[in-house]
Image 1 (cartoon, helix red, strand yellow):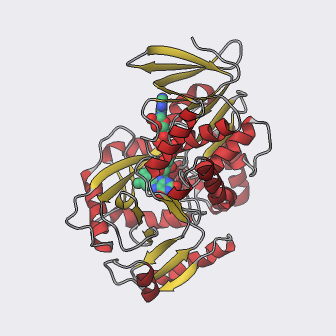
Image 2 (cartoon, rainbow, N blue to C red):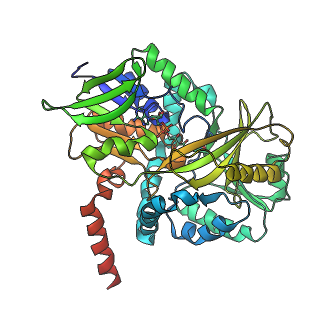
Image 3 (tube, rainbow, N blue to C red):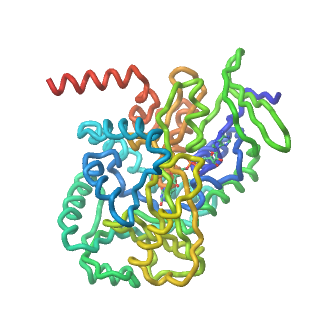
Length: 437
Ligand SMILES: Cc1cc2nc3c(=O)[nH]c(=O)nc-3n(C[C@H](O)[C@H](O)[C@H](O)COP(=O)(O)OP(=O)(O)OC[C@H]3O[C@@H](n4cnc5c(N)ncnc54)[C@H](O)[C@@H]3O)c2cc1C
């Protein structure tokens, strides 16, 4: 058994675990990263690379609930539930509906805004420290609308965003086409978000962090973590297994669980059940295909985003509730292909590389970031749903502050795991009953 009093073990080497590990190494800590797979090979590999600081509204919202039936029933649906998973996801969906009440949604918006406020600056700083500034393009992004009828709700969205301090510029169809040539449809208009951006290759960012961590003395152990247990003398035992080394136990006083969708299973024995599930999303990458646009273009009606990356054009989208283990669903890939063809016809004829990622999502669409109130030294950072890359550096800054006993830059109360405890749910139910009566 390997022991150490001062090392910090980070479980999970996705963008969240890597950012935390790198941030801590730079503050002089000894870090051990453990992952069953190569760094950055989970959900952080094939995403859109969008630094989506304009997304301050949790997807658990009254509007999303109202729009869900239409999205589920449309012919080329980007929202779907695998029939075999329908019963399993039902409790999560109930919690999601519960978290979409106006009051919770308002509090969630304030919480997301607090993270987004420094997300871009923290990312710039972390990438600079890793020597990766060249991989960030902070030139904004577009949201385009195809139907005239959608312009009214777009304008309402813009007003709501403005009230939250998110700047955007209204563009008519001509201005959109000037900024993003090659879009195949007659566009009605859209918004330009000047404070957003994209990374040129999400996987490369993970690789750079992993390289710098290794160069600066961080250890990487490739092994599956089967269990995190309390150590009688204090601290934690992390029980690992790999084909090369078999079963091993690592001991540490401080650990960070950043294992994406695998986090809930690791924390359950210590923290109880956490309603973490996965929203499976798809990506089509058209290698070597340079789009005419140089910034990400999202579609208001289709719920997809197209990003100009180093490797070519990447089109991502889709929310599929289907669990972790099921293989990609062909119909979802075809739906994405359909939308890609309709919106940016340039890639047709170029074969697409298909990828599916599992977004770690909690029903209130806020991440879980904090230190366990039951077990000192147990930190967690997961559940970043659609925003893991965007919020990676701000999450790392918060975790580093908590580990160093400093006050974090934002109030972390809304991100604590206790919000899912039975006591808390009972309290919220009582509060709701009192509001109704
Ligand atoms: C199609 C799509 C597009 C997206 N686009 C964007 C975007 O443009 N911008 C944005 O900000 N976000 C985007 N996201 C979301 C983003 O990709 C995720 O939020 C983010 O990658 C989550 O990072 P993570 O580190 O928490 O998880 P992961 O990257 O999945 O990493 C978790 C790691 O933990 C390891 N692990 C799990 N369990 C164990 C265990 N028991 N033992 C050992 N290791 C374990 C896994 O092997 C994995 O490497 C997108 C997601 C998808 C699917």
